[in-house]
Image (cartoon, rainbow, N blue to C red; front, side):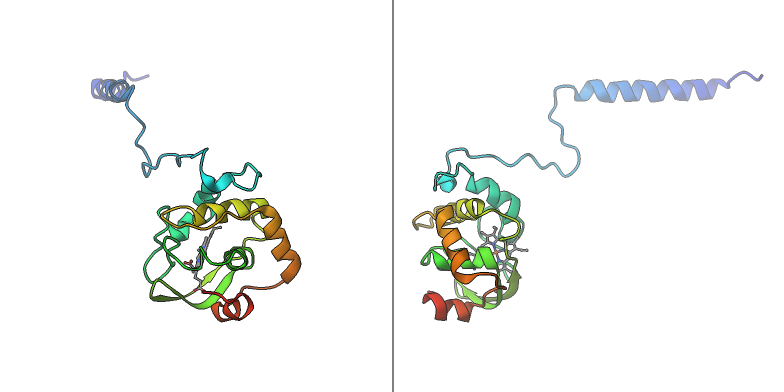
Length: 179
Ligand code: HEC
């Protein structure tokens, strides 16, 4: 058998020193790999727990809504309407319940801008208590002020409308005297 060439041994040594050195250099430093996201902050005392269900509305929001409406509730201009300062969010409770429970489709005006998109229904994804918690959260966050919503009220809505597809803004206006 031939002896391993010196240059190969030297190269292996360099790699080991670099590897161990890199590891040692990073001990105690926060991990900033990947896209550097940190776990979402969980606010245990948020108003989202209203209704006695103990479900945190902010947690539901960050998991289910923030991708489109953004964590700060500002939405994305031209694509996803803002929830902060939206009259739909703080309207009579059947309106935001209908939007999140059954979905919304077609043109809708929010803060002077018209959006024409598709808001998915959450009745299959979230329980009535979760819908109530997330609605209570968005009705009391970012300066919005409206009374919280309970799981029983979502259930009442469900019993009232039955199985149905997404609403349009016009239909909401006719049915619930929307804003
Ligand atoms: C896939 C993207 C998407 C997700 C996820 C989403 N929405 Fe929406 N949402 C929309 C779009 C698009 C509209 C506008 C629909 C239209 O044009 O008719 C909308 C409209 C709304 C409206 C009425 C308009 C306004 O800005 O006030 C409310 C309230 C609302 N969404 C709440 C929520 C809540 C609460 C969640 C989470 C449970 C959620 N949305 C999740 C896309 C989304």
